[in-house]
Image (cartoon, rainbow, N blue to C red; front, side, top):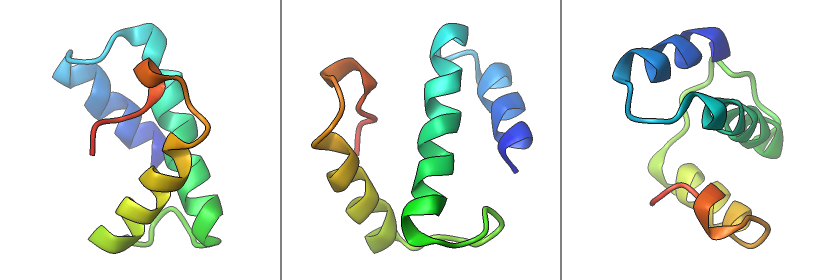
Length: 66
């Protein structure tokens, strides 16, 4: 799933290439946080919970917009 997401990000051309590894790491961390497979669909509450937790530990430019 992460390789498909990487391709999607590259095609969208809205994220700098050097920032894509951060996005991939965050997605991986999200699924690890919930201890589920990356093929599992996460609901809105789970996404908000992860982003809230992540925002506590990231520099402003690294924190995705909710």
